[in-house]
Amino acid sequence: MNIIIIGGVAAGTKVAAKLKRDNYNYNVKILTKSKHISYAGCGLPYYVGSVIEKQEDLIQNTPKEFFELTGVEVITEVEVTKVNQEGKTVEVLNLATNETSTYQYDKLVIATGADPIKPSIEGIDLDGVYFMRTPEDAIKLRKSIDEGKIKRAVVVGGGFIGLEVAENLTAQGVFTSVIDMAEQILPGFEPEIANYVENYLADQRIITFTETKLEAILGDGKVEKVKTNKRTMKADAVVLSMGIRPSTAFLNGSGIELSQNNAIKVNKKLETNIKDIYAVGDCALVTNIITGKDAYVPMGSTANIEGRILAQNINGDNLTYEGALGTAVVKLLGINAGKTGLTEDQAKAEGYEVETVTTVMEDKAKYYPGSSVFIIKMIADKITKKLLGVQVVGEGNVDKIVDMAVMAIGLNAKLDDIQTLDYAYAPPFSTAIHPFAATVNILLNKIKGNLISITPREYKEGKANGYKIIDSAIVPKITGAPYVDISKTHEELPEFDKDEKLLLVCDKGRRAYMLQQRLRDFGYTNTIVLEGGTMFNELKAE
Image (cartoon, rainbow, N blue to C red; front, side, top):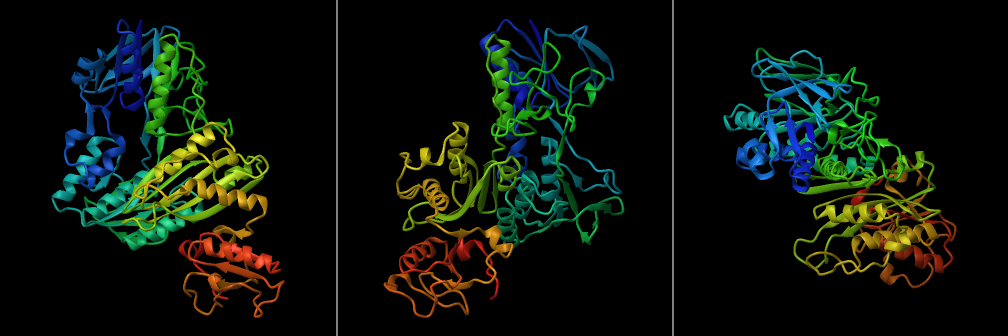
């Protein structure tokens, strides 16, 4: 059987390797435009920052090494220009010689990935304009830094790659700003989480400008300034990280069905609408596990999962890929952020009766050296108690919190199912009640009515207006606010009326909750707790 795979990064090489591993008799060829295969695309920003020191560490396999290891033939620097479904052929242009040739296939796998968005603006081709999609991009940028050519940079795009590039430029001593057209950085994250990260980055000397559109790149032969709709900024370099588009233009006229964003439509067996043609990776749509709707999730992890499943199906299995959750994690100059599942707004749009909670939790035993906190937002349906999404930011291993949520959502678990599981504990790793489980407990308390609270988003929207702030921290911290020490509160508080609107605020929310419970027993009927406390909220003056 002749199997042609178009594309040789994550998905393509995974399909090829698994195919040959399970059936060495197959004739498997990879056709790729790049010089390289199986390169570490997600590692490119870290080469810029010299975290990854050697160029060769970006290349996981050379074509020769891959052939010797797997038996898969790799043909580089060729571009597939046409797919002929009736004759089961692909037309191929040799980019070095400009010669064309035709390859016959029995099965065709499209794994062409995606291309970076390149806007049609003045100065886009100036020296000092960089992308971050291939090893050559990262190598070129770092070389310029090492040569002392870049002192000030503007990164266009506040997504994962853009922020990772900004982090690594800053680590190299480059003064870096980030601009983005959107209302927030970190698309797909809750606005309050994104705002927290934005403020943190500002403290680390990375200034982000949202709702800011790139209009032109100015300079005489090389980058000197960046013009936006709001300001003009000096720069020696511009790194464009404005998103990606599925690399599928060559499929026009092929009969293969594409989505509105030109991603390839596939079923759960990763088959296109054309027999014996499949698609995986960043060029294809997947299914959102929760909603059952089409989703575009261009992640290396997703590509590898799809690639393995497809290879097994071509080899005779009957597996399905149920889809993705949009899981992601990012490292940003000392803190980490991660997410999975639906956001609060997405869950509401899908018709769920949404309840959320935002907590501040120790990431390990408080007394253990190096302990810090996680800020966790958890989203659930309050009728079914089904977990719908989790977002987390902190210095520690946020990926563990995210992966626990992935497992719970993937297994269709309810909050009650995951509340008392036997999570790992030792002081260097976690708290006695795991921060994930503790957040579940608090969310269940909220759903049951044991906790009456207001979320950081609701507080920002003014839903606590008219409430008197009560400082309930260990020691007084809120200027001008009455202070109540729960350790000394054993009876009614004569300074407050029983029906007075009281907003209970401490550092994290825990002591405020304890005070609420006690005041409830004393007959106070109108108290609310500010979730996340002073650690996550900017208090408004009364």
